[in-house]
Amino acid sequence: MCVIKKTISIFIPMQFILPLFYSLVFILLIYKVKFFALETISPTGLAGLFVLKLFAGCIVYLVYTHYYSLSDFHIYFSDSKLLVEQWFGKTSHVPMQHWNSEFESVLFNNSRTMIAVNAILQFFSFGNLFVHLIFFCFFSFLGLVALYKAFVFHFPAKKIQIIISIFGVPSILFWSSAALKESLVITWVGLIIYYSDFGLKRSYDLKQKTGLLIVIVLLLFTKIYVALALLPVLFANWLVTKVASKKTIVYYVLVFAAAVFISLVVKIIHPDYNVLQLIADRQSKAISEAKGGVFLVNDKNFICVDYYQKENSLMMQPDSSYKIKHGSNYLSWKLDNMADTTFVTNAKDTAAYWIYSAVVPAKTVLKLRKLTPGWVDFIRYTPSAIFNVLMEPNIFTFKSWLQLIVAIENMGIVVLLILALVFYDKNIIEQKEIFLCCLIFALLLFTVIGITTPVIGSMVRYRTVGLLFFIPVFLMMIEVKKMKRRFGVKNRKGNLKNKIDL
Image (cartoon, rainbow, N blue to C red):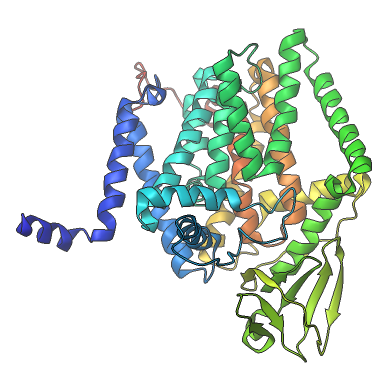
């Protein structure tokens, strides 16, 4: 027995044995659980796709460990360990960077869900980071399969295009295989789309209502702006099914007009929940963060100290708070007005602050025009925001091999849009509810991301969920037979298999 253990430890280090075990468990679930039984993809093919995600997860780990000096990937994990230790009284109160921060934006800055999920996983991982990575790969894979099933139910003849767009797009594969918010968001969004059938499901039993409500709440706690973009389009489709009307666009207009009206009422009743002001504040904060620095917060102010001067500017206190050394320089914002920046020189501040985040100066930053919190400015900003999300980085501006990969993918998106327009499949109009649902949801996400995210690396990551709806729609718009005739490609004789054994 000792010889076997020594042999295993030589070829498989101990820290990889537990991740390997969980990988095999999830592969077994793919073979045995009814949810993964698909008519169009064999169990072996589906297991192969999951293994591909595990491989992508390994690449994510290497990139985040050796390419980035600081990342959410490691912060969520380390904070979750501290949280578990606090639960069991194994440590005194340790202020955690994302959990205990008082600066919590209603729309954007809630990291507690990620820390809580990682804390629960600590009971399965025993502190092994790779186990967390594998669990998140499986979570997002569950959402991707759910999304695939939802699409293929309505477009059975387009299964190849759906497989490529959901499982084969490089940036989707990469970011959905990371222990980050995007993986959880893909899980919740995929399940919501599947169980609501793009909002077209006519009736629900109590079990279905409860399950759908739980998933929606989880999405709200993970990334609320994604939920706020998704729920109106699903509600519009639900209205269409209830009234059996063909005037789908009319109901979409009515729903979004109602959403704007509600936002105005909320703004009057509770000014702190002014959606456009929150987006504008988020943009101001993101522009400041893009320049890098150590960000600290107390109950009144949000400040930024130069990242490379942090040792000379900050003094740690016994309670793990920080004070600014006299004579230091820093940027300051009032929490109730993030749009106005104050540059403080020769500081004499005696207030205590808690570290919110430490951000290395970004390598590639887009110059964004600051948004004023009004609907006219928001609408005017939308085209350039969408363009930046879909086209940056490009082959003329990339600055690293990672950006080159994304630039090539963006060129592919341009080619896809051209092909969809030239070889348009008229039958797509029969599924206009799904087309509008996916397109509007994706464009809403792209708009918010493009307005609030100046760092290209972050923008590429955040757009992942939108691409899962944007790319499939345009791929399915292409009439393959028409394209083959145009390029002189002849169909091969023989029957196609019903199963795709990847």
